[in-house]
Length: 424
Picture 1 (tube, rainbow, N blue to C red):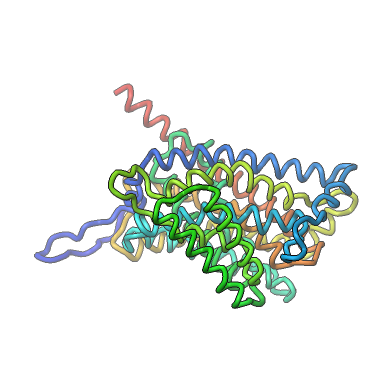
Picture 2 (cartoon, helix red, strand yellow):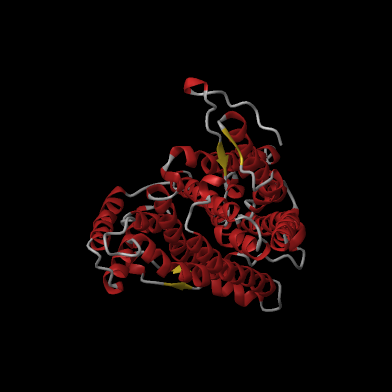
């Protein structure tokens, strides 16, 4: 693909051409591989939990499933007497957002987002990947104003699910492409966190929010002093979570605040910084426990006994599915192309636009955060919540399927190139 003339710099010398995706290829390959291995297991457990929830909700024992989700536990005196479904969405996902927040802070301090020239690509792709699916959703559901609250459902990318698909299918894909998806998903999560904190917070108790700063500051102080005993950090994290929950801000934001309180840079003599240490400790809990259990509580949509017709009725279902499958792919691809077209940048020589197409579709896997936003958008409306669950499952699986078709072909291409290089 020919590139446009980027102009000349001082003394008539050609300006350097910045290679898209090559800028992220310098990341520690061992770190990326470790993330992929963990998320592969987590993604498989996530899918297994979703399948179990679907089977259970549509089995003769579906009433037991509903009763389980509605079981209330927790101290009423602290206003924490929540049902199991809310404990999964508000509590377990705070662990997931802690890991996402730690990844984001590392990117901002030491990674690709530290340099604006390198950050422009994933940021542009992520922003376009939010605007286009949201706009498509609003266009499809324009005839029903009551559905506008769900505009953010198709904008999120599920890190665990997407990376698991890429790790399984992309054994020979360039590492730079995998790293780009990770960075894109991190930025995407930041946008989703901001949407949850701003759009889906109806009222805020300022005293509770200010009180949360006290245990949060103590958590950060201990981390900076390298006092990492779990019996000190975990209680402070729980108190912070409880106060954020009491403030009216969605409790998952507490996970991000705790992650942002961690120092990133390693001191002399340290192999890894505190942020990376705690992220690696918590990541297996997030990928193997927190996210799958949330999927078990959130993916149980009942589609038998006439339920399927109710789920598919109206524009909500196609709005979400089209947003995830079409809107997300078009947005990410368009954002990447705009950076290549209007900046001094070109696609790296080792990649083709077909690779970008595959990753763009993979960004439409919005399982975890999309389900969470759907619950927040249509809280109290069981019919719309069931439609959201079915649409997110359908859209995520379709996006993963289309991405798999593209990436399997690209993976075979790169495997053939490696074989030819080995025999030459």
